[in-house]
Length: 422
Image 1 (spheres, rainbow, N blue to C red):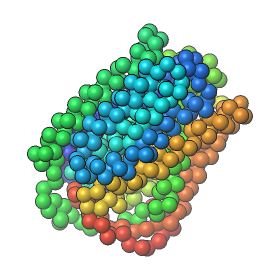
Image 2 (tube, rainbow, N blue to C red; image 1 turned 60 degrees about the horizontal axis):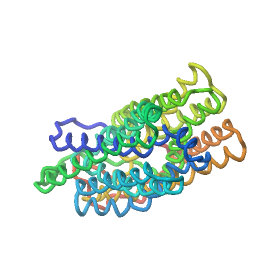
Image 3 (cartoon, helix red, strand yellow; image 1 turned 60 degrees about the vertical axis):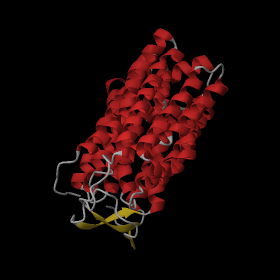
Image 4 (cartoon, rainbow, N blue to C red; image 1 turned 90 degrees about the vertical axis):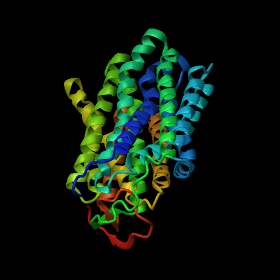
């Protein structure tokens, strides 16, 4: 969807920068636990199932709070919601770091997830409320790149800190960054009260009105469920898999995870740019990225080794971790007037359900079958199914203004089913 590019207000750029930082600190602290998986397994005697439950617990908490967080973001402002989310994550991870046993540790991770549920609604509002729809794929992908940056830094830093100081002390660094991010949220709240983040009245009224085919709600939800579940399985199990089967040291396995996150960061920006420039619907980009993910995971299942393994890890990161921003843009296409937070909160339910359900199930499969190749083969099959569902599922037609900054009012969805892929 191409549109004339016009300069964006400084508030839009500031909102994107704050959102990028908040997503990074949140991920560094929560999903970055995957980089500490070998240490946690040895210290707390966690099974593969329990390691897979770590991201599941984070997103179970997020699932509980995401819809309410979206509503509160629209009602009270993104700054307050962001501050609350960062302090909530910090509290949970602090409990985990001080835990005397695995039960308290897992409870702390779940509490961190409650705070994590407010991160996406608040950052989506901050990063896109002043951005035209025709540019939201890239902006949301840059915002979501904070997730991969946080994971990349975690993969590099946390294992080394854990080797030197222990995994509990290593968690002090991400907790401190969360406190800084909470203070940034306080600053945002103050700017919101002055109207700095408000779109000018009537902005986008003269923009071109276009009709876009998008997947129906069921296909969109199924894609999010499967893709997010596999994505978090990759980030949660990759380091353990490399230690168990490829004779990687724990720091080298953490580095490999960083390579995946780094490729995912590049993928998020690349897929967002491709989607805005070349496709009329973000669904087409999601199908392409997911097919790439299926190929990469199949190569891991087939036993890729040596330099080829590092290439495959980068491919999996680029595709399996790189699709989220485009998916968020697909969700905002249906957002009603002043309801970006609610649309994000509702849309994320199925992503969070996928993360809660699939990583533990794949962990059970690994523990029962004692086979990593089978586990990766099943994961690859799930993402291939996600691509097929999104490509072949029914479509509806929506009308959007390509240069619009404030979300359109409800009532633009036409009940016109389509079956052709975008």
